[in-house]
Image 1 (cartoon, helix red, strand yellow):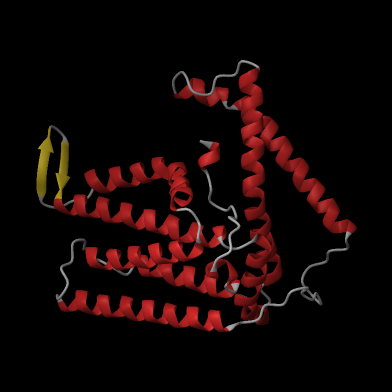
Image 2 (cartoon, rainbow, N blue to C red):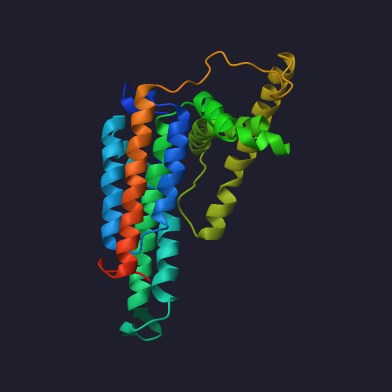
Length: 276
């Protein structure tokens, strides 16, 4: 299960998506996430899925590797679908005792599930194709205008970069500790919820100790290198747009235009709305 968590990890590959400027990928991801909450029809989500599959194909990241990251959120997906399916009022289409499934509940559960899956796949693709250093530089550049209102942009970008960098490290540490405890006779899978919760203590305690130790080592290393924030700092590799970045922006504008067009057609009733 630990190995199935791929969110936040970088997948090295030689692709046009990997070579894009991180600012392009950040802005595209933000626009993609917004588009998921605009559509109300199945046709709209088909357009999003085609766009996402095309980007995945260009990124050269194995589709199975990306799908593997969904295993970590299966519980959240089932939990969300359950509440939308049984607790949404509407016209009853199935009743069994106190369990009632409505038409709006079914539509809501299906579309929220599709939206959550597309959201995870699209947002995780950015971290698969962008190194933490590139992501930090991109965030700092994108949020640069906030410096005028005294927002600590560099510090925010640095914290997010460190958090993303620590995800694979902590996952690997968790896997090592779990295997070590299982070799000593620990059982993390059998028993009820209370027993399994108690069995996690031998895993969580050394994991927290290791995380605080790593954080302390990182803080000491930053202080030893006289790190004092972003004021006056220069970049070894400053970000510069290339022709492929402008082409990517043009494709993104075309995608946004298609979103607006589909939304207009939905409002005009020319596209059948399933969820409303």
